[in-house]
Image (cartoon, rainbow, N blue to C red; front, side, top):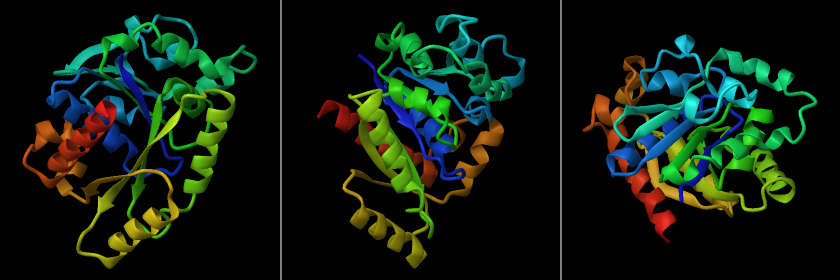
Length: 255
């Protein structure tokens, strides 16, 4: 049975999409079958896999509005081992169109039930806000992975996010766990990065991944070529870091 991980942080620019793309690709490179669900109207995860997001007939928007089945909106093997449920700007209207819909927090969960046994991992890239799409992602997921940027304001908003995760667990999805925190944009040359890591570790009872995702120019370039980092430059520090993170994730599932 597949493990479903929501990648969430209501702050933008923390490496959420980068992690969704590259962790999924790294898991696939290790022989896992992965589905990535893009629930962000910006559709950056979709285009990060080289998909032309504005020319799609069926996306998660159509799925949420029951205009297509989940199998009809899966793009199979966009890279070897990774399939995608794409997103585009149309999704921004979903929140309004779902007003008054009964049990709308569970739409995605009901759909994913049909296909979850076909994958080892289902990764959900959440939008950078705590809205209905994020709530749907968390009711669907087994756990939440939180990317945190190594910067001064890292802890800001984290307590709010953890509060939201706990609320969802209490009211909507009692099986939801905190997968853990992963540090992104780590710069070993600066004291600040190290201080942030130590600071967050001391404040968090949650699990923190050992792997630190570095600031890496190749990692920043890869999306513009529509490729995950392990295909764009498999020897880069960014590619190696996501491979190590994939090992940690696999290790946890096997625990």
